[in-house]
Image: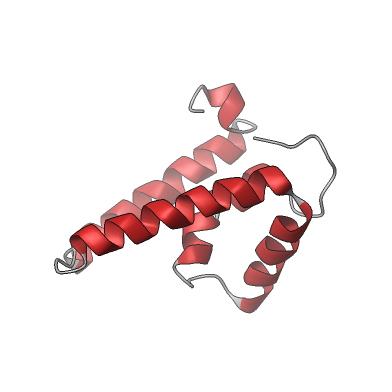
Length: 98
């Protein structure tokens, strides 16, 4: 996804890091980049708001159950692999996973 405007950090890169940002797992520099982009980009801000709402709903519904550490590591590893594949192919639009 891209709003068509130039940003220091591209839309697809910010959206790929939304959950990492929401989980507080980005370093200070990464958080600053995401915040700056969201301040400038309405479409990404709306997408961020949707992802935040989904995360809160899932947390509310599943808060009593914790995923096993090894499962969490596998899922996060696979997400990173997919994000790397998307970046390598030039974005989600080209890979057909929009």
